[in-house]
Length: 296
Image (cartoon, rainbow, N blue to C red; front, side):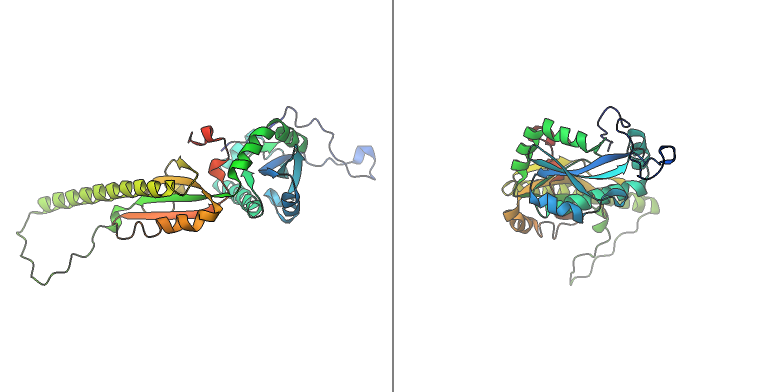
């Protein structure tokens, strides 16, 4: 995640000064930049929504419009959201979570009322004039994307392999007494356990891969597009097991329930495999032209 600060001179505009003070005693307001959350078509939808939203650092969300497009923006401290300032913030997990949470809240709120194109995290311009210039320069691209996304939402599908859930399970019930196992040495017992664990792992990953293929086959009939993200690891991974498939689907809003039904219960009875479906979300994964959206 990188800052996308746009413009040539952050200090080109004269700073605001409160009236009524002698020139030598006036205080300059801290310089600010314009943080962009999302872009939609100009109209009542975003104009009505913007005043109800709170942006980063408790800033008021407003609109900047040009060529039939509207951007949701708010003022942020110029120093904290410069290239260097963003590097420091993105390196601090607490600050990064706050930025991501606020960004997501604004985008999702706007998405409930109209079609929006979510911007990447930390998209920052020097001022609203630069935002309007950006809208004019990319109006054809944004218009095409909004037309493509209209009437669609994003659903996330993750497949996890968790061999631990298959280990130590109860043996199948049987009325016949089990024959006594011949005694083995501790060393041989250890090797047998290792082989059993490796086999369990292979079985779980093989089953998870097969399930991921079946998910994609079923989803292909219902979704307009798919983006395959890198599997989540470390702190980004949610829940137990290893994330082996992390896909996003662009689904028509009138087929969201059908999509959920097609995948519900697909992992039931498959040992060591877990399936997770999330959303609907604003279409973050499809906020670039189709040729670029598969670059991840």
